[in-house]
Length: 604
Image (cartoon, rainbow, N blue to C red; front, side):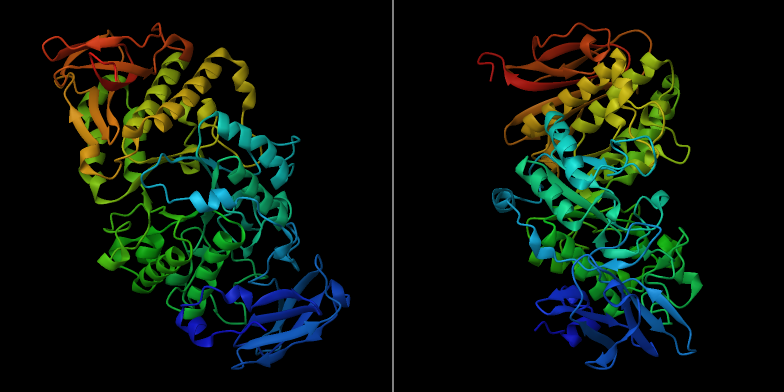
């Protein structure tokens, strides 16, 4: 019999609350348990009793309710009818339920998780958090990558999506897919960020077993899978966590801190029961579904009250983050934890024993905002704003950063990446190629949102698939080829990722320092040295010089302006011999180059 460690549950140290609570199938039907201290009484309703009430009894310390139903079977829906002190009631889905009905219906569904057998042993045994490996994440909305029909509710299931997606990721040089939240949610427009079922994969795309198959097949295909996890807030729908037992059980009782900027309910992270709920959910996804990492959403709103530094640090939420990360690392030492944090709070990726929050990676929101703001400038003005590109390396050594160009940058009127670029279509494409060459040679792991690799003309929407038809245009086809080749250059050359978080891995170089629109930097690793050159302006060609180490030369690996990528320059990989230690390089408008440093005599 599964038992509940009440001390761990109440003190917020439990990571296995889901093994006791919820609707769980047994050899003799199903046992249903829920935590609702303030409820007057609770009944179970479901398909196994024609939705008639089955009384539940208090157990343990009186804060838990349970009943056993011999007739219950997998696939049957159920809810908890929770009576408040005033005699009124609401029918709630199971906070710990393993599956739910498709919206607009909202019953939990009994499910047995042990039916699926994984075949990813080799992957799981060799998996690491990737700190010294290339990490190239493809952020994906599972319902809007490709669709089988034109309707907003036309979706491929998890298995069909895997069959289409995995070959695409393999061919295009991605190491991981990062899925936007899959926890059940009522509104398509929330993209999964306002949850009602924290243990329930959304039924939009199939069953829990089909999601397990998706992850398993990705692993067998050499692709890691990261899940977007939302530990900050939850949906206000009254059938879910809101006012669960007639009181604010999961949320704050006061609106000034209880309602988030998104109109949802903030979790009260100072309560041990809430901590145990959330960290059990995080552990659950990593353990049961074999996800390779979690991206924690809106960490700024955990560090500071309502995400506002002026309101001070939220000590309870910070403590929760530290202890959750500690427990997850103990249980899943090869999975990674990434913080989507826009704050300047120090130590997000610092070790827990040094007082840090213990994440493996932090999203570099500053790099993202500065870089996109720089590219939005008229090219003639960029020379006066070079600090937008140089600033990232002033703070980069302070954390282990991941460079994101995420879904948030191509929605709500912000336009697509292509739309952000000034000029003609040809100039927009040239600058978008340059943006990505700069991104993939800059220190830090990479994340890009689906569709950006197509130079999609319009911003993203969850109700339609990507604009795949643009690949019928030779210009977009060439851009897509550039993105694929760039990914493979990144993955193939260790200096671009091996020392991402070591000071020796990056050094500025002077190419044409007087201009302010040309940047050069060295990337170093155990296996050699690379050089990146970027010119962010238009006009005539720019010629600059660099001093190379004695006896070395440069080999051009990729250039954003090669003709088969849509640029004006005939492709070649000629060596540039250094005469007297100096090498002269010409950069056309809006062009980027990546070279490797080699010994001139041996060619190594």
